[in-house]
Length: 173
Image (cartoon, rainbow, N blue to C red; front, side, top):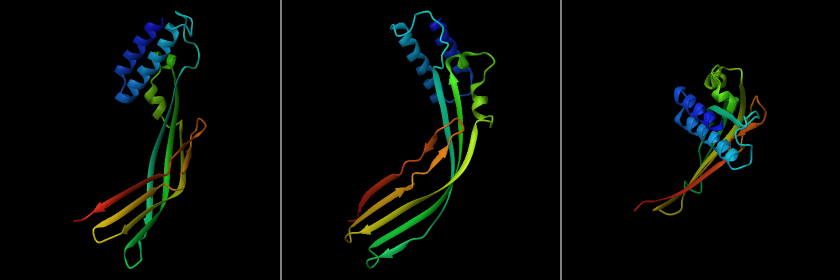
């Protein structure tokens, strides 16, 4: 029965308009369940009647920022903070193995029908800096989403944007 479940999911994944990554993820999840049942951690031939599956979470993010640059140290150091308003919409869906193989269940419709979405607004900040160390060497630094804003999910939990940092050096000769 496990083999037929795997085959059914692969068939279902091939006929929906899910992305290739989603199809691969679903197929991989079923393969892991199949592997566990054939290696003795579950009874071979038993039906999967638990909540084995995936939680699909998605964040659609729009941002509006306003910044201004400042110069210091005889125009050798330039700093530009950016204050941002982030509008996030989270989507959530729980997909079990039995849902993926059901004839009357369209996973994509459930994920995008709007009943599992939640919108929220957060404030964050970016910061960029350039320092001209010599006539030939400039050092740059960027920090994004310094406040690590988070967006609630209707199914519980949150999606948190981590602060990211980048640095670089430019040499002009």
